[in-house]
Image 1 (tube, rainbow over the protein chains, first blue to last red):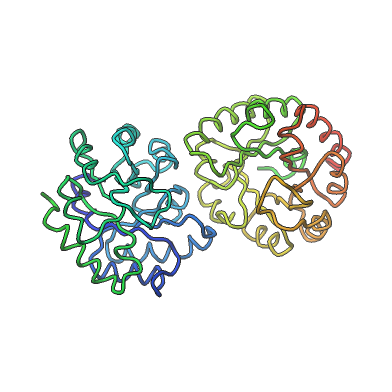
Image 2: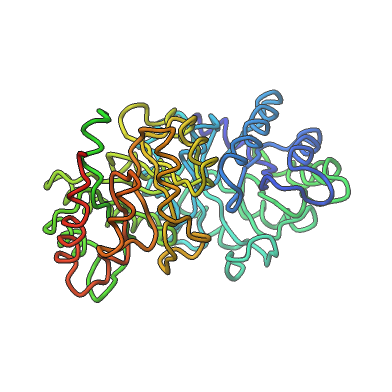
Length: 216
Length: 216
């Protein structure tokens, strides 16, 4: 993967599971987010039987492929391989990036979650292709996200690394400018798109809010 | 894998995680079980950070290799690949055997858990190499094991399948004959070895109890 091409393509990064939310299916949410211009879709599903994850995931993957949207799988490298994902995203307790790399080589990019400078440094040492930094703000979408790190952590990491960074955790169209101002290349959201009355319009608003910072 | 060679090598099948139990490390338990003649070691770890699972798992894998004991990883095909396991064991909610096969080909064998005739038939259709049938008896080792299926389920499955079968769930040296009598090729245990005052002797007793049924 070409890192330059990358930084242009992480602007609005949707994270979601396979279950219905806000009265619509996950696939419908993805479809609407794509219409709104979403850049990346990450499938993060921790509970459902994997045969269902594969079933819904394959449809999600096709939708993304048809519209040239990046498709990422959270945690499970095996599932990412079966879904022919563009990337895999691992947390600090998941497979380390260096181990994941042994399985996927350069066929996929690897994102790593970091909630501190130390975690970011470790992820970079392990060969991460981008960092997911957060939780930036308090969030109800991820129970184990810990205390918010504030947007300043992105600025701290930016001082020693040029790696693409996506902020995550409680980010909305209203507060994402302060995340991007710290040097982020994009914002990852769950609630700001999933379960919104109009996910397409919600995505459009996020796109507009990050646009001034993209490619800078 | 040669199925004939297989059925001879599933007699006593130890399942354990990476944490200490009974005042000794998981590796020490594996070492003692190997001294007692254990045939298979399955690493089943659902909670620990994967970097720790890999760290302990690699040592466990080496111990097994040195003593020609089969090494199996539960659930995660990606971890099984990284640990160069002999096999992977999947539950009904894990990756289906047919999907796992796409990733590992014939490099590993695949075991599938079944707690009913329907689940066994599905596993066989999916290309399972052996079945783990249970929980045979009530067990405290696996909270989600459901109601015991009794040894008779193994006999039911044996009527339509010659696939190797390992009984699991509440099996001890005292009750394993009735599991083997139904046509099982081996018994999988946690508590009957892990945390026993003398895991080596516990393994020897299990080996002696299943021996009359092996290769019949």
